[in-house]
Image (cartoon, rainbow, N blue to C red; front, side, top):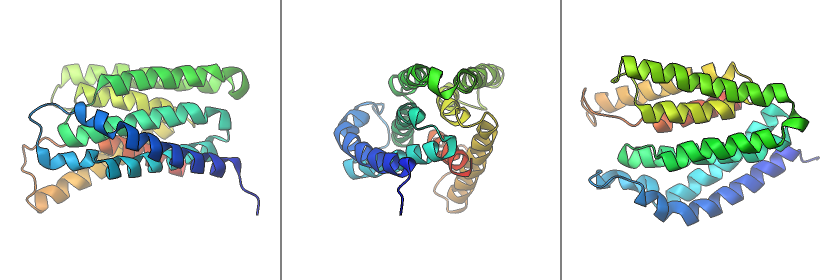
Length: 219
């Protein structure tokens, strides 16, 4: 049976993600704000980060399957890895570090632009434009209604929008809707089981990543 290139890249990404996850786990812990509940730090234990890293590598392979553009794999891998690291820190300490989100976006955008002559200018430039538009619109929403969405979530969504828009711009809508639904269901379950109260702040970063995964897997 022939092995498709996306399967090779998925396996390579999973291995690379696991190795890098094991290496960066202590650094991710250092990004958690002091005073964060220690009970949530299990998200950043080395085994947890290794598993997430491997899953991100597989997801980057799925991105290649959907885009049919292996040259976009490095960009997708960097964008998703940065989002995953930020999501883990958010789950542990309600913080989305700029060192991951903004630098991850910059590196991912540069890698995508580097292969622009081979994958098509329209795809890459449209992806960057959609990402910038998400940032601009949601920043305006945050300024108008600060309690609706945190600015860290806005930046993370901009990063993920680039990864998803490289498949097709409409997939960003799928990612956002999936994130809202999954996050809402999780919040409802926590309320029903009394593990959270009505005013409890819940990390939305992991659900943004989950929404992007749904968009990639269904593209």
